[in-house]
Length: 147
Image 1: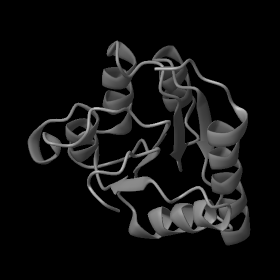
Image 2: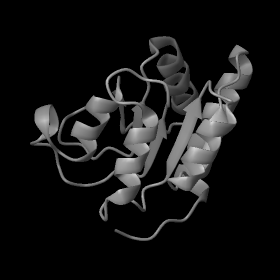
Image 3: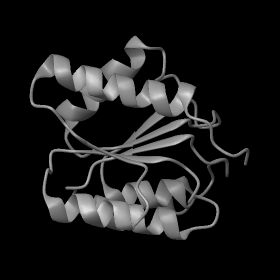
Image 4: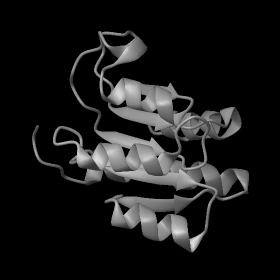
């Protein structure tokens, strides 16, 4: 993706296989043209807040953040907390896509303002369907305020 293109989807996922499956599912529905894959929470925060390696990117915010919880450096709960505390980012829909089905993670995510919490299915076809449906709903069906 060209650095000057506006990003619509930010995928924050440390597992390359899960990232590949998610991107594949979104491409199947032509939803991955303006997607950036960030491999950990620290990189996600730099991108979203235009700091570090992403200090010179356009200031426009994404339309959707797909966020894993269990990541190195900075976990997804902390990324979610920072996004939902920020005036410029808090209206961006955040969908947690994680392998964690723990009540604590679900409750904490909703307390922090997550828009949706999806547990990644283990089966390949189901995983593709969940990722595809999430992207389709949040980008094409859901309405958000104009920024």
